[in-house]
Amino acid sequence: MKKFLIFLLLFFSSLAAEPIHSASNEEETKETFLSAVTSGEGHHYWKDFINMLITLVIILAFIFATVWFLKRAMRSRLHQLNRTTGIKILERRALSAKSSLYLISVLGKGVVISDSPAGIQLVTEFSEEKDVELLLNEKQESVTRPSFSSMMQTKMKQLLKRNAT
Image 1 (cartoon, helix red, strand yellow):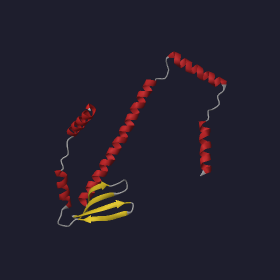
Image 2 (cartoon, rainbow, N blue to C red):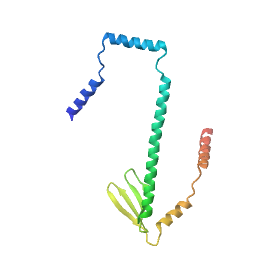
Image 3 (tube, helix red, strand yellow):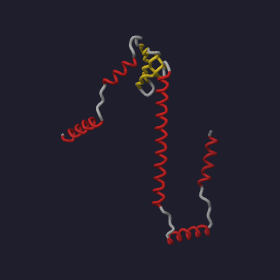
């Protein structure tokens, strides 16, 4: 491994070394630069800067579009799997970075399992009389979520009260 690192260091240091220029080459370079500056054929920095920004925006848009498409495709795949199989993942709740609780319906029977580095364990089972999907849907419908504007108004009022005191 050390020999490989030494090889890489020597290889890239030789690439980074400046080439040796003769005095005549330096004079030609200076003359070319001076003639370009005086004749108005200089470098267009603003044009290049705008071109770079446009390219950056296009690349970032492509990356975001790709991520959005992949998330949507994975979500639709999960929903399709949930509709077509007897095992459905109804809900997932992360307890920590490496452990989660899953509410699963197996052929209509509710099961709660935990997933952690120690393994997967059964937490509890619901009786077959209880329709877990129906209970979950009722619970989600009963929870009313405030709108964004009402949440924003509440936060602004809290900030104004803090600043007033």
